[in-house]
View (cartoon, rainbow, N blue to C red):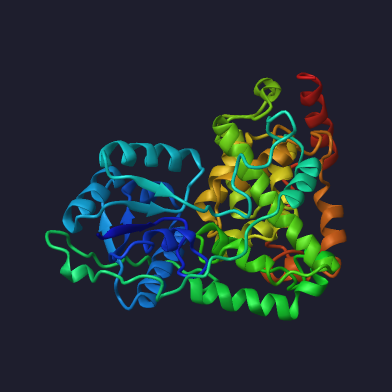
Length: 432
């Protein structure tokens, strides 16, 4: 009997456990993707561009046998099940608050037809690594130790020939829609083909120096795999098979562990997607109103008068990406120099970033703002000038993204960092 393989955050054919499960019987498999209008409303244009390009790559990998349909999944998936007489729907598990609620509705709508989840976008799925008493970790270091001890499976041996795929043209009563196009540029090729190529290039040319170069935005030393991981164009299991015991490899493994850690935090405390994980920070004083909005607009436009901050914001607006070290610098500036809510910055990042991931983005912001789990102390206030001197010592990054720095066209600083640092600490004292 036929089954459905419903793609979501797993836009690949290799290392896909759900594909093995879908093909386990003797029947054919209908590969499908649902263009949920809620995703279109909440995703920035650049993420939609990556999504649509990755879907085209996936469709090519299946020789055209990917059915794309628009609508609410709780309506479209049961309709596809009925159209092909499917006995089950197979998916990779989704642990985000949105994903778990969506899947609950689909399960209810399917009735007796099971929605079978297997695998996840992570090396270790949320909830698997806990303390001895079964409670979740709130601090990364002990989580990292336990996470490595737990370990993970090897890559699933799947590919384009894993299943006998149903031709969408043979499915009666369901239109196989064209994949939309978005008129916006992104600086990364999308999809599984590009992801696998990019990873091999990083391992061959940059991995050895990654531990030393990863904090330098002026050096081409990072992997740029974040967007591929966000959309599941490659699985981290596939990646770790290429990691050895070297310094660079272990530094990279630690970053993958952070990704799993934040996914677990969001799964355990779903309210933290937009609210302070540490509720003590609910009472901290933040600025709002017209003057605060003006400062926010200057921050978004890269017109604060602090070169490393403005270069980062220009990189974001022009490319849909920002180096991670600069993300921390720009976030600290928004929260502790401008005294604005971290949610304002997190929302702007999600609008602009190709790799915008709810767990990573929201908890990265809360780490900087001091209100997240295992966060940086609030009194750790990045000095944007010294950060620029340390991580962009020759000014190459600033020159690339902010050519007017140092000219008459560049604005004076909109705040005095020394004054605003003391003001941030005063506000922190109010909630201690």
